[in-house]
Length: 105
Image (cartoon, rainbow, N blue to C red; front, side):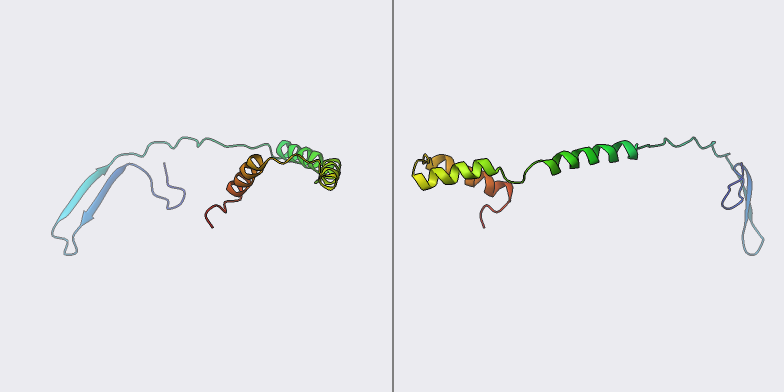
């Protein structure tokens, strides 16, 4: 089979001689095996794009802040009825710090 890039055929005899022509060596080169077709990877881009659009639409429909929860906490703070749980608050602060990777700084 001919090499499509260099026009070299696989298999046959090659002759190598010295510059002075005093010695000559002949070698047999085995024929190259036929290349096999490479596996093909595929992706369904339109399906993935559709899923991403759906996820984005759902995310866009959700409020960034739960206004009702904020109002409830604000009201409880002003009234002095918000239960104080320092251990739970400290644990949540540690978890937030770990998420943002700022521990030890």
